[in-house]
Image 1 (spheres, helix red, strand yellow):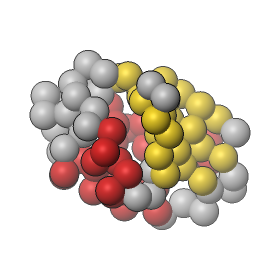
Image 2 (cartoon, rainbow, N blue to C red):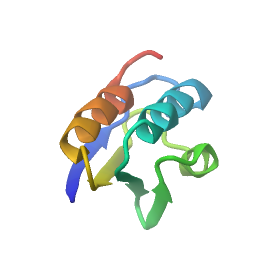
Image 3 (cartoon, one colour):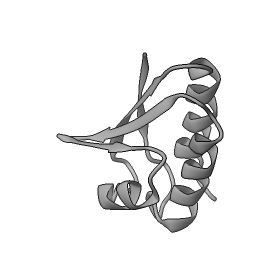
Image 4 (spheres, helix red, strand yellow):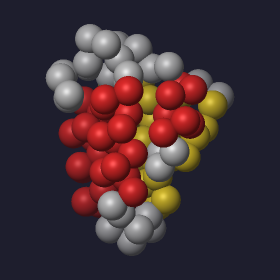
Length: 86
């Protein structure tokens, strides 16, 4: 299992467009993907779960990836979360 702390850089936070991009990218990998904000842990392949985090610019999330292709998935998903515009 790999984990990484990510800071949301998008001025609009993790709104619908970046959340959709994240879920699409996460779903392309066979590994398990979770996002953690505070005490809340959600399935990173669930758009509804992602939206419940209501992550705003500057907030930190923990990205947790476990399984086949986890290294590549961690790198690609980090790019989506740290993008300033999507």
